[in-house]
Image (cartoon, rainbow, N blue to C red; front, side, top):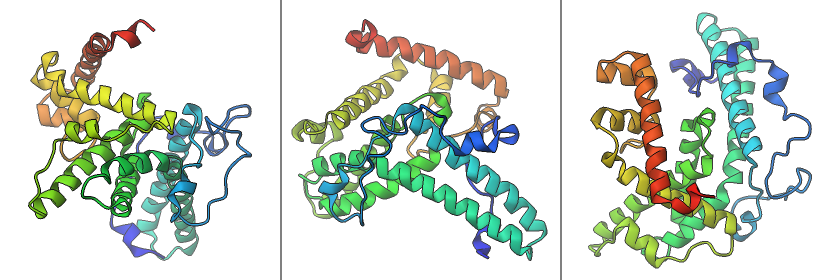
Length: 292
């Protein structure tokens, strides 16, 4: 039995449907729904190890439905694991519960790892662009994989956003800081994130990745200019709810309510109003998309 599991709760993104959920619906993709967006489900490429990054670029991309399913399944498995862990705290010698807990955590990790595999093309693309600087590609990939796994744990699929946009922002932000630390360490002149991006080629060989990067750049501009439309409280709510602070931590409505000395319902209203304002700003910044 892994005693470290008993030192704290199992972390997961909660969902109101979990306590009453039909387990089969959580575990299996509905008939007729494809897991992947760029190939049939039976066209998976067998990957032996992760050393050949050119080979990894042929890993599948998740469809929107497949992505939401896997995130829901992973968090549901962790939800179940937490229920078992709570029982095990009161009965630590229960071997059956211990095995059940370990199995649930292993299954959740397997789902997480598959989500990561399907997003490695994104990390590879960004790492290759930044490796034109003083950074080694393999070192960036190691950093990027760690950030990707953390992003998977923090991502809330129920908000309707694609994980790729969230992950791109997280990985690029980390790489900016990583490159700057190395350049400072080596007493080199360091560039801003936008300067790095402007001199590095877009992922023209991979249209899907190129689209992800373009979406992330639009989101970055939106975040940079949100003070033009949002008051201080609204900015705090958006930054907290979407993990846009320096720490990247996603806060609950309850946590923000305590921080702002407001009711949870009032924070929810502020979030809805702020999102509407940001949608309007996004349309103004990207008129070609608004009219599409």
